[in-house]
Image 1 (tube, rainbow, N blue to C red):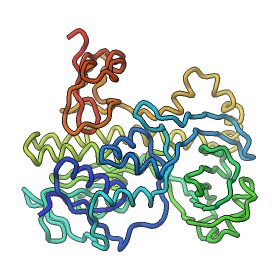
Image 2: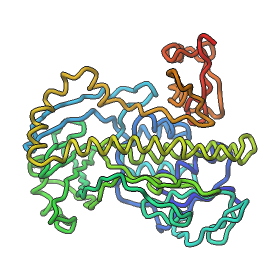
Image 3: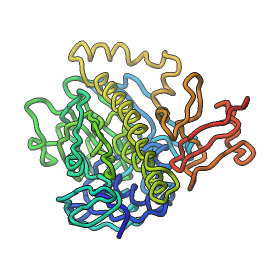
Image 4: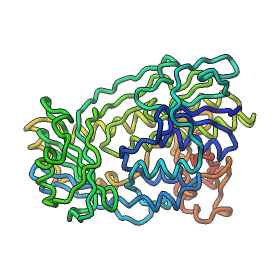
Length: 437
């Protein structure tokens, strides 16, 4: 009998299963689809999340299927540049480019090499019985709901999504072409109320456009390349385009009120939905997996008490909420406000470079420190490295690092006013020993 059942074989579920295996916990992965999803969806991961893939042995494989993101351009309705933030493609503080573009089916393909998935298995029953969970009649110690926005597992534990007040309908168009479109190799964001849009190069031959739909429009109006071409006309005159996918999405900002019920946990889109404006949707799910997997393994083996599992929501929910609010803020700033909003953007955005430090803040992939918990011992009255990521990577077990044991961390420790840091298996600093203590 496997200890854990993972419901859902998207990147979050596959990563959770691989991390559980890394920490010695057997699991079963099931997915209701009869085969892996063939269509591209998520396209971006930052360097903090790439560390998670590296920790399960996928560093080289992910590098082979991804390309560095070069930054961000803010454009007006006529595609004139209002502001530009260029990013270096070199590896950052975590050993990866700070922005990485990829094709989701490629990511799922390499993740599936690490785990075994039972495709075509729909979960229709989940009940808890004190010391175990029963899923479709089979017994497990724990269940992870990684089954997406319409999660069965979330409904089964009585959790519900809380809306953070954002909903926009967008058309997503994925194109393949062997021709180079001659566009700058970064993300282009059209900041326009009437037809906000996003364009990015995802792979060697793949490009994505996203167009905000007007009230009278739907994806049904754009089901073939002939009807999509008028939207693309300002971007490219290349004739040889292959339509890979066209879909309508409602970008939402939502967070589940409950991420755990005894032995059942929610991860990824089952627990939160974020607008795409900072590219953190999929990354949030993989962060969930990294946060929970080692704790679950440690509790199962008796190394940590079961109460530690409460830290999963305590740490992850505020972090997700902060990132969603940032995505919502940027989305509103770039796409809302009517004619007045468009005018303000034309006046203010070309002057953004005058704000000290703004470029670094826009391009930085560093996310907030985790909130205090039993596993984040951060002092209340002074700054600390606790809750942040140690740049050395994710260790196999809780580890203490010092300048003597890890000379490459000497400057990091010094800047954090620490002589040593205790680092968790997800790379998060549990606590530090100060230079004066």
